[in-house]
Structure formats: C-alpha cells, structure tokens
Length: 103
Image 1 (cartoon, rainbow, N blue to C red):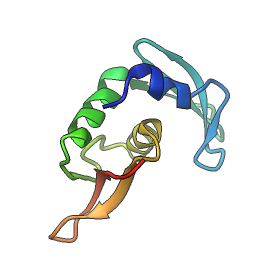
Image 2: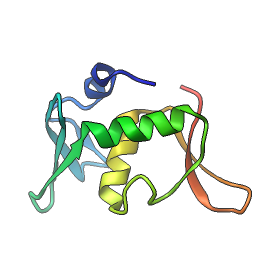
Image 3: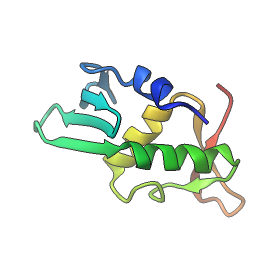
C-alpha cells in the first residue's frame, strides 16, 4: 500500500489530468479536490475512498469497473491518484476490472 504522502505527491495543485479535463485544486489530510475544467464544477475525493481502493487492490483482488465508485469521474480520478501501478484487465468471465500491476 501507498502512503497518503506518496498519493498526494502525484496530485499536486494545478496539475491537469485526463487530457486537461480535470485540474487538481487542492490536497489535504482529508482528500483531494478536483475541478472539471470545462464546467468549473468541483469534485471532492475523500482520503478514505482512495485508501480503501488502494487496500483492496493491494490484496491482489480484481475490482470490477464501477465498483470503486459508480461515478465514472470519481473512479477514474481515484485510479489516477493511485498511480501507474493500477492496470485495467478482465477477469475469467470477461468483466473489465482494475488490478494491481507492476510499478
């Protein structure tokens, strides 16, 4: 698992992510605030949600898409916050999932 310091180091305020669709507004001990550039709307991703996803992935389980969050933007941003070690794959039934990969 990663430390909160490692996660927030990747999500520095002002950073543009997802081809400039989102901008990191701020990080603190409770979470990360993101702004949708096109609309100016804010999304708050809690530290608890990010750490919960990280802990699940660290056990080696596959997490089906939309199981981290039903909101695509929130789930995508959590995966990005966790870094390049998270990959998309499929399980034996062909369901798209996230998994802990190399990196």
